[in-house]
Length: 323
Image (cartoon, rainbow, N blue to C red; front, side):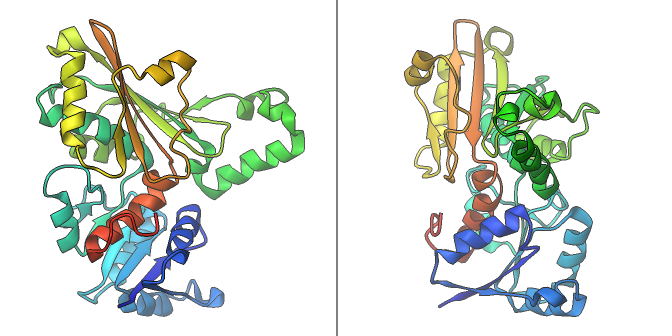
């Protein structure tokens, strides 16, 4: 049986990537809207309700509007925006979150796709909170470094235009110091991913979170420092919590403690999961301190890959199909 799928907002970065995943498959029929009618509400509503799965790759307000158009009880809506990630009645689209999450996704007709920063952060923190290794009340801090594709079409065009104009000068960090250097942002401490980071990590309060965008296309890493002595834990307990939580997960690799390959090279490759749907988890530690790191492809497991994985779980097909 072929499942009917509609991507509302297919021209955006996430929508285009979802379509690339779907193009590899013969078990789905992609419903397409006439380009001249993509703003026609009646036609969009028709396609949304004709689909077995409808992906919303839209800004928040438009996603809420599109979700309200769906009246077919058989249509599963997977929203890639921020609009519904903590909303009642919506299931968070992270199968690896906790026991029972896959069952919830199979039963759900409303799935909220996680944010890229949030996915990496939650996959670092939730196992530690659940295992009692990290107190839920601990004042957590986190830093995330991501490629510029996470900023969407406008930011991609900005970086690519600058690169075309200045050639290797930009890549070397010269000519345009603004785009050539890493750029911290979210300095009002109100990043749009923070609500889901709190709710789905199990923390009692929002972390102090610093996101940074830099001059490479894709790849993302989140790091969280752990003062082991203060939280009453050990590096071995942290490593064991990850190994237990992610045992058998096909898209998660828990790397060896203080990964020898990384330490030998001396630098961390945050693009090491690019072009995969994988998350790699690292623990680097000494006797009193640890830094835990999660890396992923912000366009893969951080966006489109996660959405397709959630669809596969919901439909009851091979979870890695097309990925």
